[in-house]
Length: 137
Length: 322
Image (tube, rainbow over all chains, first blue to last red; front, side):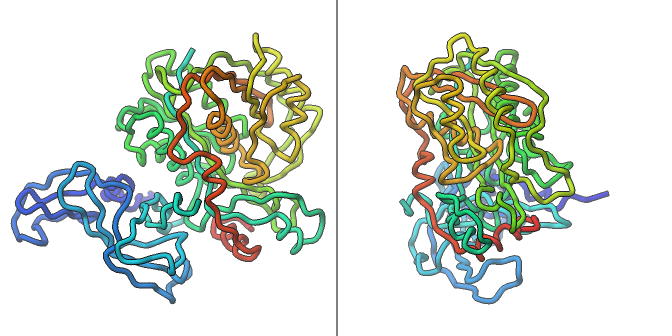
């Protein structure tokens, strides 16, 4: 029988649901942790909803990657705000449809639902960042 | 009378000029351009984009959705479905009802009619999503116009308009078809006489077929005008064919969104879909002047041209032969 991959991470991957440490406010996605990476507590984790956008904190441009990636590919550390306030989640994310010359630290990026890769031909969809579509008008 | 609470659309960023394709393969260079999905887009991701735009336009969140009906002619999976995945991605609850409509571009209006019936019964909010990513052989005439796009409606109480009347005309005539072992879905051939008969049959069955805006999703350039002429409709016609290409069921709700963007409160939009088997006519009365955050025209204007070679590599990554 085919075992669907990434079932446990679907809420994080497909809906940007994250978990917030109730001790220090640190937000984790997509990893679900026992111990808070920042304060070391064994907290209760609150379910929080992230917005579909973020701010680029830093980035590199990958020039040589396996075939399934489009190169040159900007890869960035992005802060994604929560819908209801609190600390943003800091993630490492792929860009798509974006010229590396258009990426800069501090830019607003849109998070778009895209295929990340496939397993046995079944696409695994999650979010990639891109230059906002409205900026291209 | 069922309300359209909101609507939305999505068109991929990339475009290829049809003249560039003709230059590579020879033959007649059709005018206009065709939307090319990025390497990481597919029927589900296109549908999710349009669905989120429609939900935002309706002021509803995914949890409010009681039913998700999706339509496509180009899902590469015989078994998997689309509706359940679109529903999950937009945040619908696990009690959501789903329906997958396929097999014809008419699947878009099949899904709209099913959603209307669900809302008339016990479903408060129904999400209808149509998305297509058509493929074509490199040396086929369809390569120039095999497009991609999506549209979505949120049906329920009140909102931007109401579905005032519907009529169907089912002939069983097969004009275009695709075997499941064939890469080609962008086959542009269809029988002109039967197309016009099916559309005329559906529209003439409406009690009042007069409208300010007409939507006749086109398989090929100029057929919207011919269909409007055949049903004697004097209205503003809306088509994305010259900018997007033929986008199957996705193109039906995409073109409807283009008309709703332009229609003012008090005006009527007449949609007539067509696919193997027949046509459905749907009359929508517009009651509000709101548009989604990105209109169809803005999606068409915010674009980036790709070369013939790049466009071909994107099509290959979609799993087609080209």
